[in-house]
Length: 160
Image (cartoon, rainbow, N blue to C red):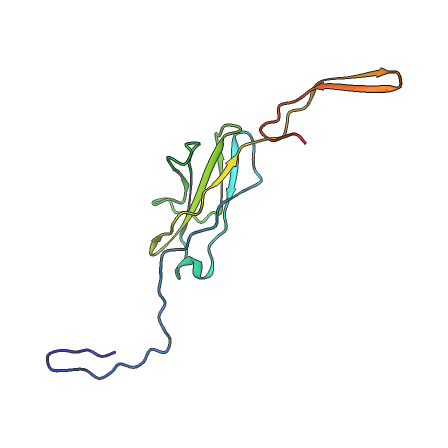
């Protein structure tokens, strides 16, 4: 490279053999996944950190996770990591949910260049172990045993 003014051109600068690093916003993250801490009123949501070139060439300083509070994706509520409350956690537990409803989640990363785009949305439902069967009775009749019960609440997962 060289400079130019009204008098003419400068000498050429020395060649840069090292190269330059271009820093960008973080790439789109993978869709969050469902953790193992799940009840009728609570969900655990987890996500993978960005590494390598997916960070945009700068260190990630926050992961923001949002959910739609069962609004069908119309409105989004930040749960952690948003502006003013940066966090590097890779999971969040959301309490106070209602059983059997759909909750959508999305996550994005932040570096020195700003926020990356949100991940694809993941939809999760709250559920729990089924209730125990009730009114269990047994009858013996002519070399046969009949067991009867009242089917329990499934708590939003099929009983198999």
